[in-house]
Image 1 (spheres, rainbow, N blue to C red):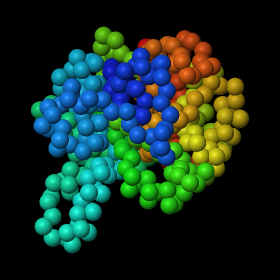
Image 2: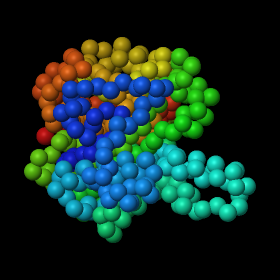
Image 3: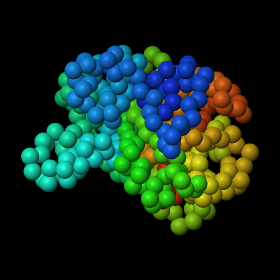
Image 4: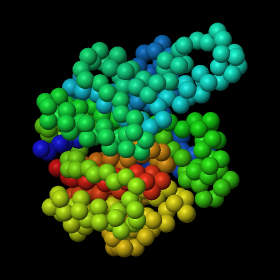
Length: 340
């Protein structure tokens, strides 16, 4: 079954809501981590409602509405949201109030809005959509499992499916994880943290002007060594009747962390030797559902068939893009996206 990416909406640290601006300008982090470039939310939601929404909810709502408007769809057949950390800002607010008020006289609002399914629920409320709605929380496989479920829903006739990946970075989260050496601060070997909200409308029907085709996806958990990763990639391509020669671009998971990037460097010097490649996390930062940004980037490049002004080395026409996403070298996923 062919699955088409009919439209997309993406709020990220880049100008990703406006494709033309994205192709012309690249934004680099001004602090220790990437912060999303957010639009004027008044153009998406009534201003009175915006005041009651946390930042991650606003990003998810704006990205999903952009996606639906681009396709001319009022309501999807199903809504799937993927997140690893959920609404961290509200979680921190609730925990802080517990301490300040000594667990008495607490307002339930921050707790209610801190749950992982808040984004998907808010989208459904705004759309008055009573169709299938699910939130997938599975660490760095969250978006991958949402895509797998979307394929099952499409096979059952629930079309089109709105699927998205949402995670945010907060000062609290960055401070805590920096202590473990994960995120860059004073530690030169830390990753550059990031965030984003990317939504896609998937359908068995190609519609009038689809972006790309989602061909396949495979996940690999805790490989015993790098040879197992390479073998998995070869088998993944072989199962789809392809080889590395058929891939025009490889999007890699380089994080800016010299130590954690060693395995990616070895892949580029062996399996991917001579292939055009680009580290997609240099645009969005590192977070568990960053594969959603890579999915968006691949779709846009295949649709536009042109090179951003800040990227070089691409050869056109681009027909196939391979995404290799991994988090902590334990959660590996491989995506194959094709031009239509």
